[in-house]
Image 1 (tube, rainbow, N blue to C red):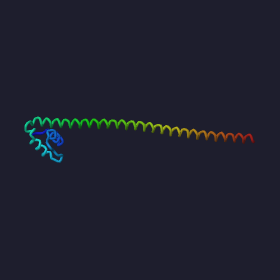
Image 2 (cartoon, rainbow, N blue to C red):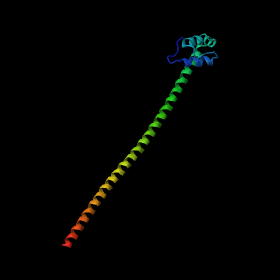
Image 3 (cartoon, rainbow, N blue to C red):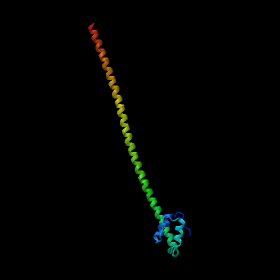
Length: 133
């Protein structure tokens, strides 16, 4: 009997369970196929059993697609979160850069003020010295 190329061990186990056959997950694919082909239902209506296998395959693939979509959605959500964190980090970095620049400007301004004070003090001394002469 020819099986669908996407048939997996779990599909055979599902179908065998559905038709009332006792199976073990330790059985090989060959043993499962043999058990399926020797079942009364398969002998009576092989097309029905093959349809069950196809439905099992479709169900498994559908679940895999849904899981993939869920995983992709979670991945997109994580990307969005990372972008938000990156924006926040960049904003914070910009604020820190501006703060540092402001501190530098304040430092330069304070240095200039101190220099101006020193110059004024020197001028005051010179004036005092000239008055004293």
